[in-house]
Length: 236
Ligand code: PXP
Image 1 (cartoon, rainbow, N blue to C red):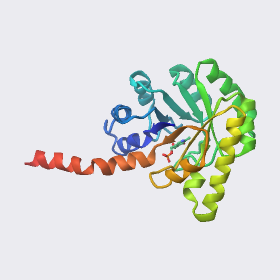
Image 2: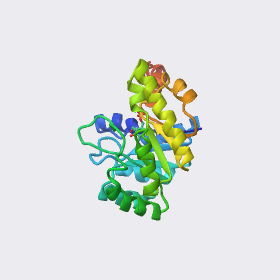
Image 3: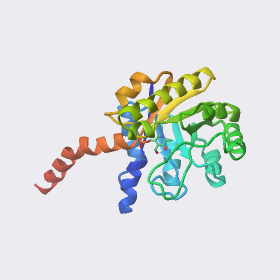
Image 4: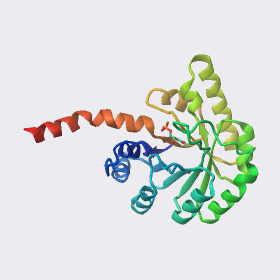
């Protein structure tokens, strides 16, 4: 199974202070060193973390494939077609949300999605749809001509007990159905070092997991002692 590392929150830290660091480009190189099979970024309409310049720089420098998460808007589709990341993942986007909430309504937005998917595919980009683990949404992905889906794992990660078990069963059914109808099945959102093992044990046919926040958070803790020691060495 492949790991796509979402580095949006390296850019969040940079944007919080308006500095040039930490650099998503440097972080991506370290992710590659650590074994990342792909790098994921979300170029949001409000540019709250990843900037256009990050996309251009990553597109040039990465050795592993770049997966661009994006809303279905004319501006962002245009940027994707011009920069040609290996893959785009179409997600729903609301300005006020802290992070992507819920999956794309591929079935309900068929007419709005079809021309964008056709345009992106014609540019040689693999199109993925970020959807809820619902059979109706999986069938819509096939009808739309998207070869890849990313199952939204956010609910599984947020719920507990019996509700979490029920959501895990929905994810299993969705992965099985997606595989049966010929889709590449990816998954992501909210996965962390604690909730991943049970998910991995239960859900079959997964190709790629896209994980961001928990890895960036863990990287802060794993590097904190070294960072303080380096500053202390300077003081000495
Ligand atoms: N996949 C999609 C489509 C997302 O929108 C996000 C969040 O940007 C992720 C995966 C990664 O989620 P997390 O940061 O919670 O690991």
